[in-house]
Structure formats: structure tokens, C-alpha cells
Image 1: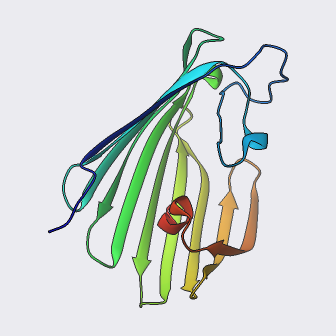
Image 2: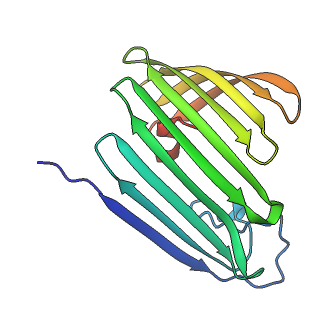
Length: 177
């Protein structure tokens, strides 16, 4: 017997005064790091549905009460094809910028300790890709070490990055950015 969150919904309303300097047109609040939050008065609804053992679906809506319209809408999926291969995708609409992006990622566990990862981001409106990343990840007892090759089409630059990612942080454990 095991327990699974079949369907989850998380909703919040954040009220801020108008004296704050806004750095982003999409308001966000980050409870673990409030200093990284973007002020604004907004509502957020996040829902996930574990449709099957291998398929999960999610959506997030951010409504700005300052502009009286949705600020960000996104929907995504994650599929565990095999114990070794996982893929994910997301489409998101950013209303203040009037753009739609589609992101896709994959993770392939080569061994118990090594994995290959990759992701690509598309600008749906322009019909062009924005960024591509491929990497290799090594797992240690307390952290992941990842080496990535990244091509940024917007900046027209290629880079190599070296990352240490702590194990236990849910958004980092997925490694599907």
C-alpha cells in the first residue's frame, strides 16, 4: 500500500502597497526568499494531477489585480517513460510581454550515479528557439555535480557551466529545467 497526491491545488492572494518599486511586470512571492519577490497585488492558483503512475500534469495561473488581467498562465507535463528516461514540457503565456514560450527537457539515467540531461526553449510567437542545454550529471551523497553546454540564441553565445546542486531541494532534484 502506498499514498499518492492524486490531485493538488494551491491558491494564494498577496496584497502589497503601491509604494514598492516593481522590477517585473509579473508579480511573484517567494516565501523561502522574500527578498527575491516582485511586489504587486495578485492571486496565484497552482494545480497538479497525477493522471497515471507515469504521467503528471500541472498548471499555474497568476492574476494581477494591479492590471486586472492574467499576468502568467502555464501548463505542463512530466512523463516517466522508463526508470531511466523522464521527459517534461511546459507552455507559458506572459501577458505583459505578450509572448508564449514552450520548453522541453529530458533526463536519462545512464547508471546509478550518472545521468545525461538536456533542455530546449522555443519562442512560439517568433517561431524560433531561444536556448538549448545538454549536460552530464554525477550524483554524490549530498549533492549533484553537473557540467552543461548551453547555447543562448538570444544573446548569441555559447557557455560551459559547472553546477553544484544540493540533494533534497524539490525543484533541483527534478533537474528538468
